[in-house]
Image (cartoon, rainbow, N blue to C red; front, top):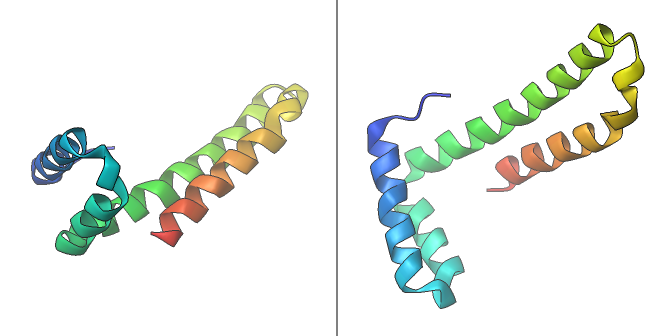
Length: 90
């Protein structure tokens, strides 16, 4: 996943603000996403993409291992679902 330099700079600024004031982290993060809607869209897209990649990778693992990899499928799909749900909830 390629992250544009402008988004990296914005996240650095967010991290600096959070370091100085963790007590107000929720407010700072909410303000950050309100002021940077393009970053919000990027984060949502990355979350959904990561979740889908986990699901596809899990299915490919099952195919490659002849079904032996099925033992960890439930946790992989649960993780993927949570990541996607988080991204969509932003």
